[in-house]
Length: 265
Image: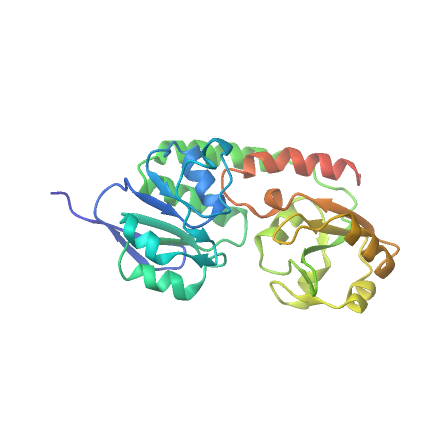
């Protein structure tokens, strides 16, 4: 019998895995899609309600609740030999409960480099290292070729309504905004997800207000509301997946960013 393999996850935790995982439960949509991209269709035995990619797998796998409302008892009955989660997207209490019984590898991602590190580490754990390295190279090359906004327009990126909340400093979304050549005004607030009163939005006077499609589904009504608050801002609905998913969906982000930046250059 082979010796267990020891890994250090992105939270600095030791994770001991007895063998190459064959029964994987994924707790994060972005990382679920990554596992399928790496060719682990059979190994992924369950995923969350929000794991919608690839579409062919949408209805075929057992669901174990939402990212923050996991059905831990259902997960335990599935007897996974690996669970993959994320510090920000999953609830600490539920994660700690699962850690007591199963190998649980956690990501902690604030920028593109940490996302690529996560892809490489997961690829190694699931015996798809060459696939993962090829994916990393493709993503890195595409980002290196990204045509940025040349005006360095100021922006705020809203993720929630009532209260308004924005992506601030030390977030993956902020890193994507910076790579697009945009200046995120909320980094000066020194919070990851600051709450913004309408008066604060007005005083920041952003040239752009980007309204994310997730986690809150902003729509045209919110554009009209924000026009009243900040009439000089250009207000745009954007695809939140392509700004915040840090797995293989990054391959789709570049073309989206470039088309978006063409509107501003």
